[in-house]
Image 1 (tube, helix red, strand yellow):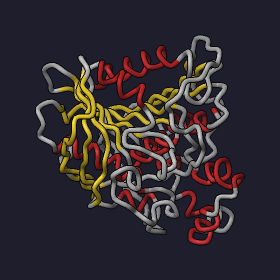
Image 2 (tube, one colour):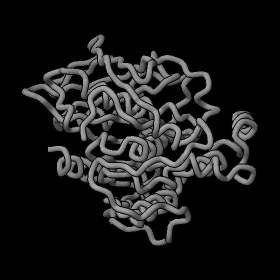
Image 3 (spheres, one colour):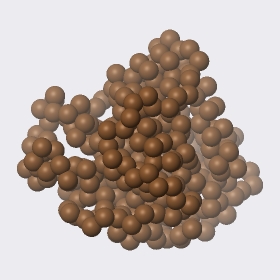
Image 4 (cartoon, helix red, strand yellow):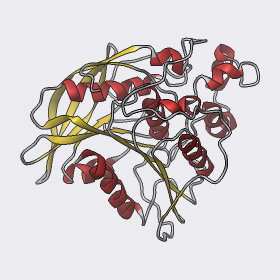
Length: 352
């Protein structure tokens, strides 16, 4: 069921503070032909296994904590007020605009590429990887993807997230596991649907997230099933926030770790809380087809993380494919163009 302007679903989690999750640069890693695989290990979470019709959801369990996916699932999310600002660039294929939209009461900035020609065009929301908000500039993180997808006839909305660029501030976002980023993605989709712009087909929406944005994507699929028609995660982080903390933040002595554990407890002290902020726990809610692309030489986000997500979603009866790319690192180098061919073919199957 398509909902315009409002959705009962909610926000995401994601903890990654790693340089290299930005997704802008190329690598010169040797590449060979990628392979598709299903995860080899049984999932370590306990997902539900019931398959549900497209666009329906299982009820959320009683929330134990307001900072939890069950509580966020129950929240009525809003997205509206998409406004095109200054023209940032014009090419023969598309025009690039500064944009803002409203998401759950916050103003979120971003950029939008609108193709030349007759619309309406299917639209993609892009969720970027981690970049320090103090140095982030609007639209940073996925420039290659923004350009290529617009040239292929998609409206591309790249969200800046709260606390980034010209977006409103949310002082509790970091200690609350950056749940707000998924609210911003949900709001972006609703704002696209609510825009009334003739260039945008609000009934054909895809989601593309890389690195940290891949984790935001997982949460979006869980808290707002049916909002998008298809999703692609590219070199995503772990779907278990405690693993991201241990991998990215704790080794660097990030003081935020102590704040998080003071407020929410450790996984040993409060395992229910940490289960409640992992999308693996609610895999049965996912309705969209999902493609995960991950390099075998990724030393920023281990491939095992994507294998666990693929296995858990597959066991829950979901349409998920894990595509491993031999020899590629976190941002992909030689194989980036061919993997974008795969991404575009996947979106075309579900959005064209």
